[in-house]
Amino acid sequence: LFFCGVWMPLFAAEIAVVAPEFAYLYWPCLSFLWATTLPVLFSLFLVWRMAGDIGRDRAFSERNHRRMAMIAVLALVDAAAYVAPLVGVAHVDTLGEFLHQVAGALDVGTVAYGLFGGGEGLVLYERHAA
Image (tube, rainbow, N blue to C red):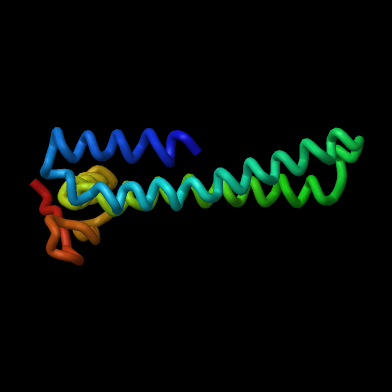
């Protein structure tokens, strides 16, 4: 809670002062951090409940099984929340070039389709024999 509620806002404000070109990202990044904190906090709550059951000698109960399954889902959601923006920020030209080179290396004909070629949308790559 200290990290999300105190340290991160102060750190982000300092970045906004040092690098004003990133100041517009203060609230979006802080909101993203707070949103991705919710699954972690709920997981901690579930672990606390499981610890209580373990203390009452009910470690291997159906309730704890469901709680562990929920924690796994929450971890997946949290991980996906951090991976999804990375995919959106990926450099488009690099992916198009990669698809072009893979199609050339596989030598599976003369046509390969690349969805992200140079930012033009769907691009048809043709490889001509040398």
